[in-house]
Figure 1 (cartoon, rainbow, N blue to C red):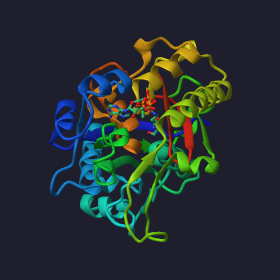
Figure 2 (cartoon, rainbow, N blue to C red):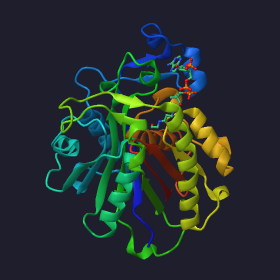
Figure 3 (cartoon, rainbow, N blue to C red):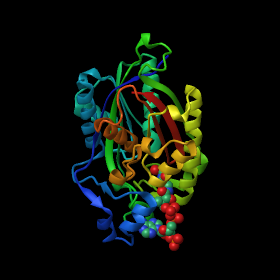
Length: 325
Ligand code: UT7
């Protein structure tokens, strides 16, 4: 059976833009180093009153508008985030209340940078089994609030933002036709043995603090290229297609060099890879839906295109989803 269909996308970014030069004025770094090693030129940073929930709500409203729907049409909200407004309740319930569509399913998914992939897979499964008819799937983060702003090896890499999609339950008559729009194949993985390469050094049950992000970047980089190439090949095999058949890759935006290396490994031309890391930096779970929305709105991704979403992050967790839009 073809999977859930994409009805609309939306995104939201904090107003404040912070350039590399602005960071270089505060810590021992430079625009040249950041651009050369990561491709990042700027990031958006949440201001007073902007939270994961407010960004998620704005992105959700934009996705609903794009889909021509209202909050009343939504019965599932899944929010992928590692930076919730509160330890509990789930930030998804704040979004639900802000939209005014209380009563359905709403919960958060914690899989860090691949959270949106985990959320899409969860929503697709719930929709396929009839638990709801339309889902808002959101990735939203305020990583600026868990960064150690004295640590130049991490603080230059991340930004804040949110992206959202509206998914609808599969059309029963869509059958097995690979040309029908919908989620076609998904693979998810996790490897808890890699915890110490990328984690936050605090939490309610350990330190009773929020903590700061810690990363051994070089090692994460090495794992990312291998894991992403592997999972992309698995999804291609599941779908019975080759890399040449893909119209667009919408990757997690951690580092332009990871995007290049992964695409090269699979033989996918760079022109087919959507890149927003230069403008948004790494927005964790928000990065894939943000990039998807950018590329739909600027006309690159069109109805009927075959789009591969992929991400890898803390845990480690990683995954990929093939979607006909
Ligand atoms: O979203 C979750 C997944 N996350 C990722 O995928 C991130 C993966 N990792 C990366 O993107 C890269 O490894 C980084 C961008 C984090 C680092 O790039 P790198 O080319 O691997 O650099 P490095 O860590 O090997 O550091 C090279 C040098 C070091 O100096 P020494 O030891 O060679 O003297 C660092 O101290 O660059 C130094 N350095 C900096 N210099 C200026 C590290 N951060 C900075 C900085 N400005 N901000």
